[in-house]
Image (cartoon, rainbow, N blue to C red):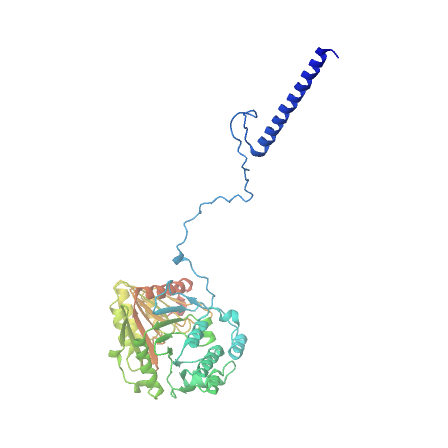
Length: 437
């Protein structure tokens, strides 16, 4: 081989080796670039570093917030769903010392009524009802439960009282001789017999007039009163009210009346202590009246006479002429007087509906399939008069009755709402059946 060829071959061999070295370096740099993203010599697209952080695409994109189409209702104004059997109308938060309940009537068949009286209320009927509220009070009692109840036919309540007696609570029960003890032998009854079997003392008034109270006293601290009898009809079918007041002072007033009756002082035998029957609870004045000893109607009439703006009433029986005259006089003075009467008997010559109706005072008759059983007067949207007293001479002069007169705008508002509810579904009197003298 000539020197030139040898030289060329050596040169070519050296060139090939250099090329391979350069290629290897490039490959190494490329591999380093791919792995690290760093271009040490700036030969792979400039001097910028490549961001290798992965871009994450969300798989659950949040839904856009859609503005409300109407103004939200403040939480305190949202009505709580309540079963039709008992409407709890005290506000939220309710007052610490009182509760008010109204019955929203539902129809109970006679056969079911007797079955429930004997065997107990079905759970769906009991839930949320005034009956359930009463049973809860009984279950919480620790010392005493003193009851003056015109009648009773709800076995669930009787069993709750028996359980209270068993745990050592002093349970005593006063009732009417006819509507209470005599009725206890009828179908669907037997609740008083159950109480006696449990060792609970039960007494009656043993007289012709009515022991018409509907009050319950718990532990010397709580008074339950109103127009509601402890019956299926009273607690589920009729228009009725209950007010519960937490006050040892008020309960003491009722306890004195209870002990008088327990000692056999019914009718006018029980002395009047009307001057000692007013209490003040956190700025609310409450007066208690008992019939017949306190002559309750004569104490109610001045509240009507002093009305400035309105007198609204709901009346089961309203035949008392002095009360009727007071309302008629205020209507003629321009005060907003109006009311709803229980239909049965309200268009007779004894009722106060015809005189008011014929004087163009707005009055109506209820349309409840059962009774409008309230005995309520609301004065100036401030004062509530309620209890067991029907607006009659018998209730005022003969029966054992109780009335609470409450000066509280918040409570009056609730009773006025009940008035407006019933007014709205009532009917105008039939002129053909209403005689104007």
